Length: 389
Image (tube, rainbow, N blue to C red):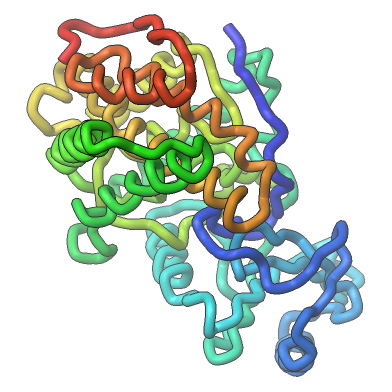
């Protein structure tokens, strides 16, 4: 039993930028800090000078920590305190005309209240888009995983479940925006637009468009029937940080959190963008989650509390929505934003999509469409857990 890794984009120890966003506003080489806008550079210098004394920062130590697909980027700065023992902080650079930091602030507060290990906001100049944060370290959970040793990875996944369950138990309606039908459909529409048409060069027929429309409607109906909780939306090893001195995993990249299907984040965790496990391991961790979620009264829906197979099917349908979305996003990042390294991982998501579509008769038209686009043979069927819907 082993995993299939890839070489993910370099990750920062600060909060991760969203993959569904425009390209970064500055040019980076290694950790060199380069400004493309002199006015913003001057504004940063003024802001840094205003907070450096209060937080004992060394302004000349500022260097790049992370920049990816977003206008938001992260810088690292060291403590000026000789007794700081290498203490560092993270600075968020988010131009206010391009990035709204209010959701980050709101979700960070909710997660901290739920007991999660998230960056603390030490200073925020909302008007200029600069924020000083505590640093959660430099090693992601993904960095610490040996894809060939799933048993060694299990304790890390158990820690991830602890964070996920704490987040879900804190859920309350009306606090975060709803992960609703409109958004779910808009996300899946990225797949035909960017993956099938733009990447594969397909001219979709009316019949193929009808297949996608009907399939997407079924996926949304299934997923919106699930109970709603707080949803991180990118809960995966790349966004979970190993605490330098031990303790719970740190959680990053949470600014897009919503209130939606309880099956989403566990599907995200185990059907990863950059790491694929054998289904036996995926089932093992999912069952561990299900057992704990039952005790936390998070499985009080239809027969979820008594039948793992029922919950597993819901996870598969939720994962399918995410995989269609991400395949479209990765194609868009390559074709529109000039970031080809993402497209290298789209076969992983096509594999996920085919794997699920092969197990449900309602999804067979989608499977045929995918196989036509990819030139692939029908996918083998794995664990079905009772009826195959």
